[in-house]
View 1 (spheres, rainbow, N blue to C red):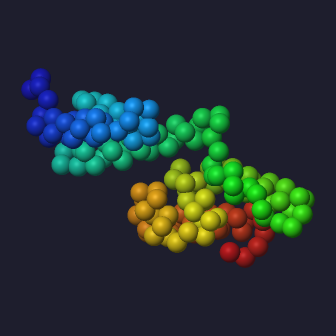
View 2 (cartoon, helix red, strand yellow; view 1 turned 135 degrees about the vertical axis):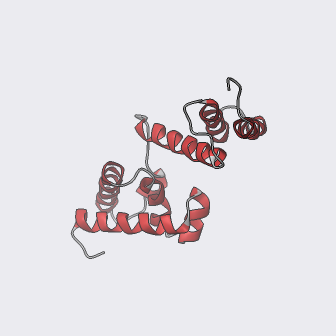
View 3 (cartoon, rainbow, N blue to C red; view 1 turned 135 degrees about the horizontal axis):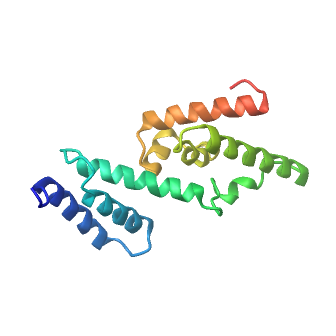
Length: 158
């Protein structure tokens, strides 16, 4: 069969429709564009979960690419400020956050760094889960890993 299967065609059409809804250059557009390329890749297994899998993989590729970018900042700059009474306290807190973010990026699963800002802002697991598009169970697991990493780095009980 030289043509494209019906399931692959249907998945490609759904991704293309999403692509038309988004603003070119937006994260959603870039993700949909990558998903379309993944759908059309004949090496990819054609099964009932094709659409779900390519959307997931497209998001992961975008996150990994952003993390490898030299300007990648793993969390908001606002998290670096207002952590103490003196400038020295704020500097120390900023250094600790940077060290933690680097360790999380280096040693934990790739999606762990996405959970750090919500954890630092004291968001609930459900809030972070919705914001990140990750299951709540995964967010809990990643937060547990981050806390253990922080306890190891800064020698305190988690």
